[in-house]
Image (cartoon, rainbow, N blue to C red; front, side, top):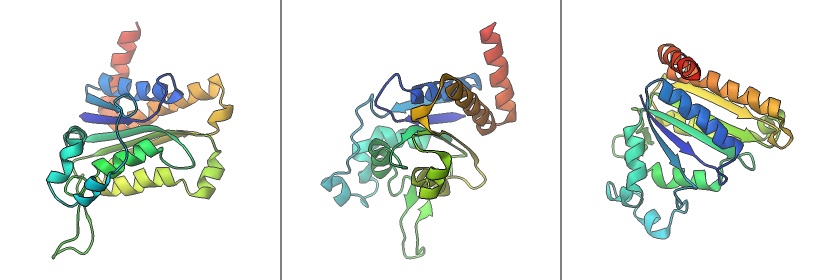
Length: 214
């Protein structure tokens, strides 16, 4: 298993960092190779510039500005996002990562003489995980339409392998969260990760973590 964790939060001591740590711990205990792309820590530039937009369809030259990120995306078979939901959607930093890294001939293939619509380019990704926090309640997020979740689950998910494993967990009402609600959510993330990595790998991970705790 080769897992890319795209982590997006400006504060290193955020609750999202705790979620990321649970995700990474589960992956490592299962024997996965893990790469964490911490967008704020690395100073990722989220703005798709004019020159980049002009060369957007110039494949493969369009990857030049984001070659390391594209290499990570092509390397992984497991893609996981950890981020806060702001205004019901993705933080600008993460949306910019999608804009600049999910490129033609990387994440999808453009229409051509034989195809009238885009075609998926991430068929090598067999697991997709989405872990977020929301200030709003579950019902209000659903009422608005949860655009951030839909972008990743449906938009990115469509590009991945059919029949992929999927995991999603959100802590709602973060502004009124308690130590107990946060602890419950981290346990929920661990459970979702067990599903994402699969039963056999989950058993190995649980056994490894139990030994480490002794």
